[in-house]
Length: 226
Image (cartoon, rainbow, N blue to C red):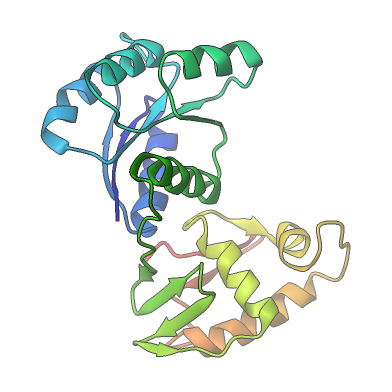
């Protein structure tokens, strides 16, 4: 999988995206400042740069210009600001794409694949995610455990894909009802609990002490962290 250089000064965002991209199979080099990113650039040889716009010291615009001046490395700008002026300025500085915070890992991963396809002129290899003994192929919609395919019902699969898209993120039952069952569905949250129980029975070594789909008492569920 491609190597990602992540330049982001917000520690929580940096660690969260690093974890998510690592789970997607990427090698991630994460730094706080533009200066650190430019210094690491020559040694790390990344395939794509994910660059925060508002950095201390040398800002994201300038970092982008310097990277672009030295080559055609794909750049995705990452910012909390989402107005047309910033979008245009970032693209004019040389960015290939633009993602506004809070960046959903699935969206960022899709943008990474897209800029790499445009850069190479071919489809990048898709590698299934590995989470302990569990393997998730999002494109093929195949889940394997200990190397063997797991037969999941459509709702169980959607629930697993939703939770595992952001490892460690807690999702409420209502959030899961809306995202897994139906965007506007207002139903009984026990649907989620029942589906979680069925899913655990298929992917956990010990459903009573789950490793993958964990309960966060009083809040909901999360996937891992492992």
